[in-house]
Length: 146
Image (cartoon, rainbow, N blue to C red):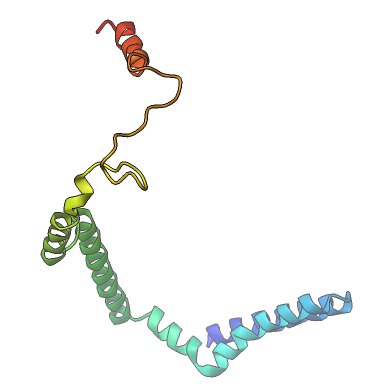
């Protein structure tokens, strides 16, 4: 009974605020405020408020919410462990099999670029001799005393 009275008062106050807003020529905002103000009245008329009031003061309902919470915690924790482990046993076996078969035999051969055909060696960059290829590497090694 008290919940219905409170919801009706909230709706009446909201409709009053909507009327004042409409008087100030802000009709879109007034319509939105009126829509929000009618929600508690609709909840009272459909019986949702009675149901919520009965549920809020029922120990059985609170025990049910506790069981639902425990169920959710179990579900979430098992999902977290499953993600950390990398899936179920069946999924891990499938992943291992996919990793074994992922490399094709020709994938391990070095790529010489398009049109190379593997018969000619790769061309050296212009302006560099064979001795200059490793000069920067030698400089780094000398710098570190190796």
